[in-house]
Length: 331
Image (cartoon, rainbow, N blue to C red; front, side, top):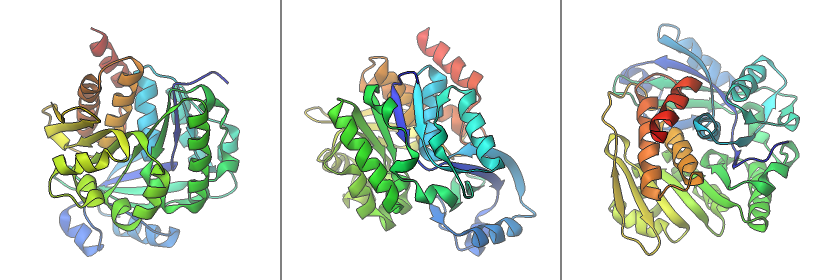
């Protein structure tokens, strides 16, 4: 297996995306803008209730996978550690990764049902997710080939793993190996629901600190209980060398040890769907760092990729769209 720059661990999920209004979310008792876990029957019932909603299609998803795809399609080399079932959805999912040259391993396949996520997008572009994890809920060290990590530049961890004790074990092993081989570590808090209901799990994933921590404004304030994003950034620097707080169309706030906080202005676009925006930002940001860009330049690139993602439906761009962005960056 070829060496990689980015080694990611996350939940493998196939997204089904629908257009809904706020009333539908209220009727379904879903908190807008968050992710909620469910079982297979609960998800099936929601799908029935969505029979009259506009279905925007099926897409490979999962937070870390979206980040890894962006990183790879921009020109980086990557490996994605996950767990999928031995079913048609897994074939669809892994094929999508292979199309953008993301490396995987046969260990990722096991008996069980591949996880699925119902993504509901309201007219303001906000996404709300209802997730049945399936077999990815049992992601453990046994499903992961750690060899590519030994020569990687970055280990990337998604915060959604905070709810899985076995995933904690997988991440702990990855962190230990990363430190032994001088690999930098990045993590995303992923969702306000993870901060609210699984903060202790996030703390375990973060352990004694990371090199880069990604979050949005709501997650930063909730995690630190700070009164402003500036205060939140300062607090998060106790557990991260660099803190990146995304602010949607406004851009991103960058905090780094021994440096003043920097605001990197975002791209002006019409937002249709926020699904995958933060993931795309992280992918662009990490790719830029591997190209020896400054954190401010990396945030600018992250903003460009995220803006393109929110301007269309679905969590990812086409491979050609990523390549077009990469071409613009080179010029």
